[in-house]
Length: 148
Image (cartoon, rainbow, N blue to C red; front, side, top):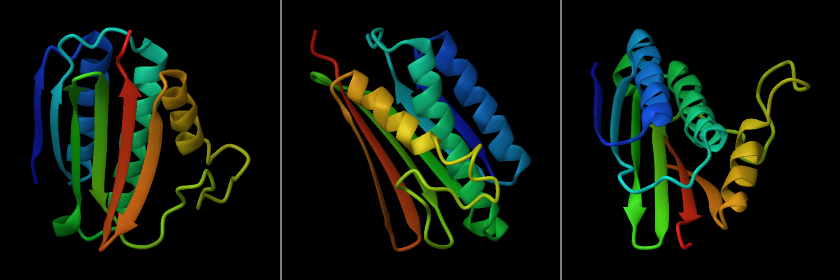
């Protein structure tokens, strides 16, 4: 089990979020790796950074908790490529996840907003938030327009 965090100038808010989530993953015996280069990415508001990364990684941690220790893996990659910012959060998962804004939690009134909030945040920057699940892996892809 490892918690690996490699970042180049991610910014204070994102650094705090990633370090906190990496520690939570480590405590839950999850192999957590993050490769982030946000140098030059300064247009995303702190609340949206928290929404996109915080919710995405929290969902990944929750999914990994349902797996045997040796299958608990989360990968986070983020950076700017030309006029786009790409965020990828990938994790192993056991069964069907609720990617459409629904929740598996008993208290449906207070849960199930993470993905829909991430989609709203992505749309705010002319972007998209998509999810896929196949072969025991759940992938969250967020693409934001960095064009000014």
